[in-house]
Image (cartoon, rainbow, N blue to C red; front, side):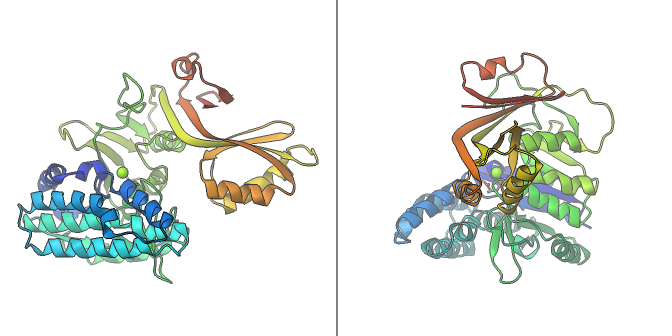
Length: 422
Ligand code: ASP
Ligand code: MG
């Protein structure tokens, strides 16, 4: 029976040594109860995003050399892992995948979001094909699953929503028929049934994939392997002297993820909470370190303040053209449209006449929102802002971060302080 889901992100498979490290981690495990969810290697997703932009700029007319960085990067890892044996069948398999990616990149006549999912998804296909073959070669028997057959979603490309009934049906069947072979599958990528297409769950969505599998097969636990030793109260790349939070409740973790703590994809926690499946965040660099555990604890935990910065924010202020109050009626109109656009408010503030909404930059959706509202509402906005949040706030904690910056909105509740700034 499958009990555990291990998610390995891009950094944990970024080169041949990292893949060997993954192997040494799972070697010690009961693999017959394990499923691995693996991301694209290193920064491959960014690299394909960049290539896609180039292909679209050139109407698809680029040589395959436009992909040489991506190809050489994977080939280097392959040559290292397969000890230079380029006659191994994996080389041909991967070459065919590169060609397939190239063909998909040329098809620039399609809608951007659709083509995005059809191309960027190759990052995960490449990584899992390579890693699965390597592990089998080393005697770690495993079966590669195509996540697009199990994580079934709607057609909301680039942020697809799982169709839970379909996912459950397929994943449970997989679980029931499991013969003890370890499974490997892709994070982030998913599929629709009819017509059959590839979708993705949103950047950094592999955590969410792990949670969907866990929920649908009633797993015992999910472990996310990271290059940090667990959840910290701030991003160590941005703040000095961060602290590890060794135990937190789902609710606290959901709050942190909601405000933009990048340690866990925000959609990951609910499917786990619903089935009471603990989530461990553990270091792949030093496996002797204790993980952070996120579960349904009701113990009182005195959390240290957490500092979270969300970049690339748009702040929009909306006023009715007839100067009517920004009342529930007007707000309902605006939020309904945002809901239809799948545009999520990270922070809102309302005065007599103005509704201010802060959301993640998205040029296309912003223009759609403006267009739909412009008959009745006057709209102003600023892009390129930051949303800074402090959980478990106390007076003065914001000072160092905020100093000298231009403040747009500030908001404070009993436990949380938020500010939008430049
Ligand atoms: N490879 C995807 C990304 O970089 C998904 C993930 O890593 O979770 O966004
Ligand atoms: Mg990642």
